[in-house]
Image 1 (cartoon, rainbow, N blue to C red):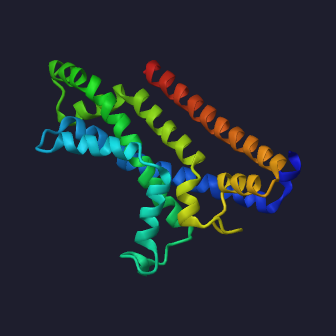
Image 2: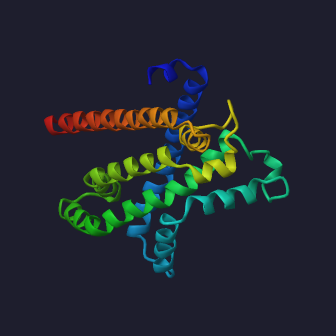
Length: 224
């Protein structure tokens, strides 16, 4: 297993996977968290349709999302002039389209259960609008954190969408999951298992690190 970690190609695959996963999770969180909170506190015609659409997108098959992005970015597609197909950027776009509805939907569900009570408490304490929004976000921080971790795990494990828009090109768009799929197809089961173990170890390490940082932040807040 340690031999593959000395392979420059494998190191490149791991680095690319981490870059893609972290960037797509960050973008999706930056969009999905405010969207979920805004959707919960907004009241407009068609809200039920928007919520239903978001939940449908949460369950969308990744290959369908990958196909949609492919059709948009292909040379004859509406965004073909950007030349993004089979690039790192195309994979990030596909990931963001997959993750954002998941994060938005989870935040919306959590806010629907708890935000009303939090806002009522803030009003009784005389908080203004900005203070109320900050308090709501802080009180929902555990649920928001879980939504982000779920999105990260979804991004780390994705195969279908990034295979379609990235093309699994060696030294260019090959990720850990597409490498595992390729190795399995080639009959290199042992290497696929080793790479899968490395993928799980990385996911575990990132999750444990963020858990540690979050617990430390919570202890700091409690001390104040």
